[in-house]
Structure formats: C-alpha cells, structure tokens
Amino acid sequence: MKHGDYTDMGGTGEAFLTTHWSLVEGAAAAGEDRSGALIGLMLDHYWKPVYCYLRRKGYGNEEAKDLTQGFFHQVVLGRSLIQKADPAKGRFRSFLLCALNRYVINVHEAKTAGKRIPLDKLVSLDMHDPPDLPQSLTQSPPEDAFNYAWVSTLLEAVLAEVEATCRERDLTVHWQVFRDRLLHPALRDTDAPSMQQICEQHGIAEPVKASNMITTVKRLFQTALRQHVRRSVVSEVQVDEELEEIKQFFHGYFAG
Image (tube, rainbow, N blue to C red; front, side, top):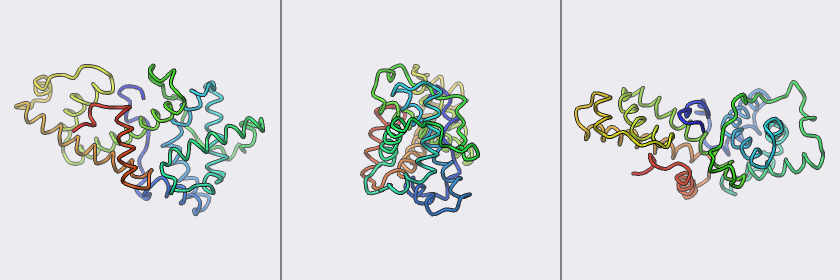
C-alpha cells in the first residue's frame, strides 16, 4: 500500500452481501448480468493480492497481470471456483489462494495463458498502478505478499468507511485528529506529533479532549474492521484469528 493512499483501493457498494462466501454463492445463482456485477465486486477486493502473489512468485508485471485476469475470468467467472467452494473450510482468502495455485499450474501445463479469454468477455481490471510491496517483503514468501496486499486493501476500505461515517456524524475534526496523530504516522513510519501539537493544529482546548476524540474514532475503526473481516470467514473464532494476523502487518492504531 502506498503511504497515504488508503482510500484509493478497495471498494464499497456491497450492502446486498453478507460474506465473501455469499458472494460466491450469489454469483452461482445469479443471471449473467448480476453474476458479472458480483464478480466485479470480488475483483475489487482480491485482484491486488493475487497480482502481488504472482509477482513474488517471479512473474513479470505484464505476465502477472495476464495471469490475474485469466484467473478471475477462467476460474472465478468461469464458475469452477464456485463449484469447489466450501465455506466449512474457513478463510475465503486461503480458499482463493489455493484455487490460484491450481490455476497457475494448469496454465503452465497447457501453455495457453491469455489465449482462452474471448475479447468480449475480458474482466476489466484497473491495473494502471499496481501496488508496491514494502522492502521488508521483497524476500518473503509469496504468501506474505498476498496477505499484505489483502490486508492493505481491507484497511483502505475500512478507513474510507470510517472517514465517511465521521463526516456523516459531524465528527470531521475527530477523524482529522485520529488521522494526524495515529494513522499517518503508522502508514508513513514517522514519529507522531505530540498531543499539544495536535491541539494547536486543530484548535482543541486541551489534550484530554483530543484523546477522547481519538478514542471515538478508534472504536468506529475497530467495529468497521471486525465487520469487514467477518464477511470472509465463517465463525467469530476465525474473526479473532484474522484480526490477530492483521495486527502483525499493521500495528499502532489497532490497539486499545
């Protein structure tokens, strides 16, 4: 995730869904137009993790793009993914990664990457600005790149939702204080300004008030994060496991 770009990826418009498993089931039951919309929503959430995983597997930029598009068209849109879906197995992203690995093996065996997708059926991917991985992940296993990109996309969607909620509730200054004191320093790996500096910048009378504002936004953030994670697993235990894993990638504004 590029520092400061947390609103650029991810997406909204999924109020009609409950979980990512229901997204798969809905695509299976939907007509062609509806199925395309559902697949497009899945792409918003998962194309960047898939792309980053393939890059760490050693594929170049263009080949990784082709494989990403081929995977979503042939496996997801082609519905073989849906036929093999089993929510009882747990995490949706683990299931998706397993399907991706099978697809890449099949492509290499058949040597037909990018040749079986009708031009009028191509899934649109906004891939003009593929994500950059942090230096710490350039030597890590491809699974770490996949998880990092997944978490980045998840956080961007959550943060955009929290910011919108704050503006709707007339808590814009609350959001700005949270952003400047916690969010930007965490994303940019910089020192946080002092509470006194925050108060002076935003015209807040005393640090305790600014601290309370941050607490309010953190609670909104934690609630929204849990709701988003809940969509891709099948139990509350798995939600807690996912949240613990997320904290290993991005820490700071998750605590307390």
